[in-house]
Image 1: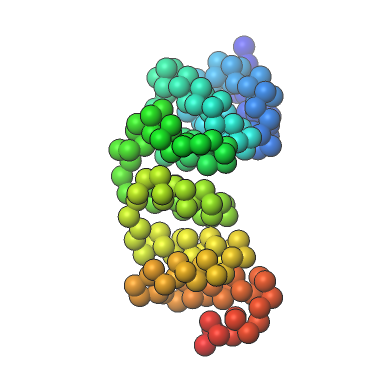
Image 2: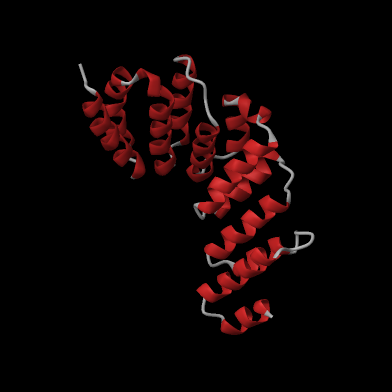
Length: 198
């Protein structure tokens, strides 16, 4: 029987495989991890979903998610975030509709949960996925969410897009202005930086 130490080492290995999208290797660790630490089932399944997300393997992620539900594991916002990321990266057509069919719980998430997912995507610089999340859910954006998008595009060195989002704020805050200036600075556009800092 696996000890706690064995489990921790095995889980670390599984997570390393997940980070690089190595689904096959992560899956080899899955059963032993579940057997060793059944109380950590959600975290383990989420790690398997991470492997799918990093590989852009949406259909495989759907199977993992279905097995997760069949095993009686309650999804968390992080679970849905990995599903959404995987779907957005996969290139699957009409992934939003497919995902809503697979995980109807998504339609019942409240605004705070959607905002947390949006923030997670944006902070990781996944601006395209963040935009798809907004489109897929029809979520209404508050000042904080818009500011998150400003910052995300600025960090991605896309200051023009950050500027467009800034204009959606009413009124724009100082942090958002600084983010746009930072975006121009990352591209070495000194004159634009000076304009935004005035």
